[in-house]
Image (cartoon, rainbow over all chains, first blue to last red; front, top):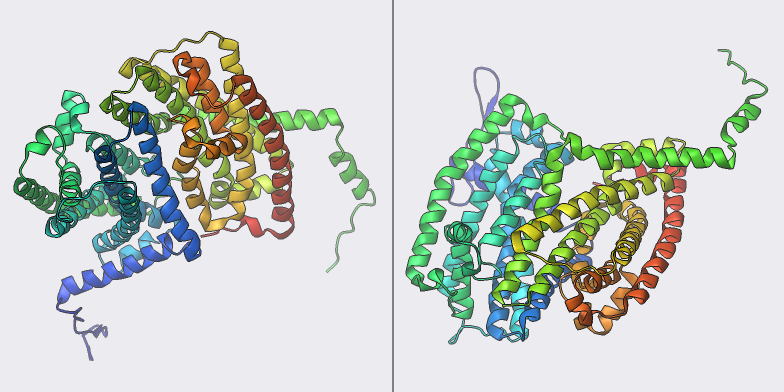
Amino acid sequence: MQTDATGFVERAPRPFGPLRGAAADAARSLIAAARLAWAIEGNWTEPFYLAAYLIVRPLAFLGLFLAVLSIGGNLHPESIGFVVVGQAIFQVVGAALQGPTQALLDDRERYRTIRYIFTTPSSLLPVSVGRALVKAAIAGISAAIVIGVGALLGMPLRAGGVDLPLLAAVLALGLLSIVGLGIALGAICVQLRNDAWGYPQAVAGSVFLLCGALFPLEVLPGALRAVGAALPITWWIEGVRRALLGTTSPGLLGELPTASLVALLFVGTAAIWLIAPRLFVLGIDRARDKGYLDRNTAS
Amino acid sequence: MSRAAAPDDLAVRIRAATEWSAGHRLRHAAQSVAGRAYPRIFGMLREPSWLFFDLVFPILGMAAFVFLLRSRGADEAWISATILASALLTFWTSVIWMMAGQFRWERDSGNLTLYITAPVGLGAITLGMAIGGAVGMAIRAAIVITAGLLLFGAQYSVGEPLLLLVTLLLGVAAMYALGACLAAFFLVSGRQADHLGDLLNEPMQLLGGLFAPIRNLGPIGLVAIGILPLAPAADALRQIAVPQLAASGLLPVPVELAILAAMVVVFGILSRHALGYIERIGRSGGRLLTRAD
């Protein structure tokens, strides 16, 4: 152990597996944040009640849409598959999109710890990503339950089995893209005085309407259809449908070859990750300068 | 150190100041109700963004259901019913978060201590919350209906406006009475309250037959209509405002009105006891006043 001229102890940077330097620090922060997120999101009750909560709510959501779907006539297995996959994936979208903002605002206003996290050598970026990933993972359990129930209801799976490589590729890219959008949204919401909690929900609600989770994009009016078709989440849901069900959506999206769909999702995700971390750092720096990290909006 | 002696007539003076006549108590309660209702009705004038967020979610949800129905080529009457259901949902959402979850939020922001120590019963405060919330939400529900008329061409044919008004009033009263009961329950449930709120959302929309006929739920629908105010209110309103769908109703409208009236009484009595319990243990132990998280 060495001391510098000021008497502070100089520590050799600690590696984290194969990672070194800043990457190792970021990985450690991410894991610590993920453990904290589990304590908040998954450890609020007994395991039995948690399991019931994870099962009841998404199934009720699914039941609600299937009940509405049945109004237009008899339920076809293809219609069930379309709604089940869209609704299941959107569980994860909602959680990952809102996760970073909720984590930042919870730490700022509910637990009032953001100022202490900020003063540590750790960056808020891996902390926010870690919190969002755990929320997404918990939502992923609900999504798996919804898909399992869909299969029991007669949802036709892809002939020849699930396309696992495609599923793995679109899940990884889709999750990355949505967490990227989530941290960009968090950087914006932390600047707001009023209703910062409401914006991520409003964005998620709008995306739900536009991304073809429940109905084909062709049902939307022209301008909204174009916006929906340009969202990476739309490509993600379409990719999962192709991997699980082996079917394509009606309309232009369905005509897109699977390789092009994955390439589009990759480019979209790369573009998001090129911009989102910079926007996050800018947003957090601005919030620190303006004193927004100490703000309590009581909302 | 000498201690100042209490005046001999202190007990008499305290009794005189706190033993109010029935008229005085009633006036005081009415003032408390009005005082608590005021910010709920006029608050949105000071924070118009609240109105935006209170409207954006029901309108987005409404649009999702309408597009889903259109993708299936459903009868346009169901689109009108969906818009009506979205308007009713604004009240239910307010019941979950602005009634059931309110005391928990007040505790975390420090107001509950003031409520418990103030010479005002929690019953009057809760009634003020309910009246203010219902009036505020009525404005939002009217905007949701207007948006539905303009965006999706919803059509209603109300042959008996008075019956519609009575149904709406009874439905809203029953929902808010249930909200008052749940306020006590949420307060004692600590960290689980947020998740309980979530469980009262989509699952209750399904059980309440809000967007699809409750008749399709079979025996579960019959149970729901007996305990969940959303169910008879949604079913009766659909039968009255969209007569083409009257055949989809589970029970005749007068029976559903009787159920709603019974719910107002039962939930009203239950909430009185639940709030009394909270007030008692809040004052004696202070346990409920500490943050759960």
